[in-house]
Length: 427
Image (cartoon, rainbow, N blue to C red):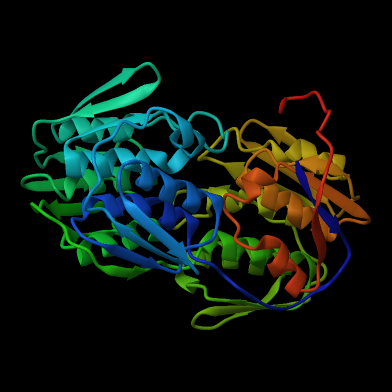
């Protein structure tokens, strides 16, 4: 078992380059299944979720190589092999294999997905879409079975705005017969990224990035080369870290339009930042003011940045309220921050942060990916040394975290640690 050790109090200086978007990568790789020939994707992050998906594509007969951020997938010999167990259960985004395999093979067997424990995240909207396209969907012994004689385009209204369901239905519909219309579709940049890849493969998609997506099905898709968008959540994480401890930090390779809600809230707090076409410069900011945030679907404030932002709020004056309308259970980081002297209480779907306080180094555990990011930021601000365990969550979404933080002047390192003996909600 490894721990991330952080000696707090060191000012951050320099440039950090943002990697490719994790939330795009986990959909782009399964999308390659739909092609009849080689698909190349550039700029992918070197994270465990990417490696796991590449391994899953190999399990169903694909030839996959991953080198220096470029994945080359030859799907020509893939078969509709059942994936009820193993790696598929460890990865939330494995559900994208359902739409991709259904689209190409008209059948799939996929184990119910795993990933971060953030409370109920049902896939009922995914299933509703697949059934509308003509698939029979059953749950048998912990796996989802999808079968269709053929897929036919349909008009599908999503009861809940869902990124996963929007992408999954899109993956199945591009090879269905006729027109599919997805209404109340999610608008996230990752959806546009996936639609761009599919269009380069020969799909006919209009409206990606709006709440109505129209898809004309095609019989066959071909290979292409595609470059992934930058990770707006990773960029946001470093932006928050720079706001908390930065002297002068340049965040490179960002799409500013993807980050407007976060930038607006940081400016409201009093953070000094300047934006250019693809960079954000943060300079030392003192006397931060508390703000209230509410997570919303894109283009609102992202739920994935709620936890890191909470750490920053411990440095701000007065009380601030963070409300998560997306995942009500996304407050497991609060107990850990309290161990570090944070003054936070949770009421329903909101946390109330009172500051400013001087955080203290402590031994804490990441319960999920973005909780891990929150604890890293807290460690950078804390007095003394913070030990963060549960690194398997952090490794799912942040490429080269230690190296990037070291390059900015943080004193961080990984070391082997003894098994955590705490008996609590994580055991």
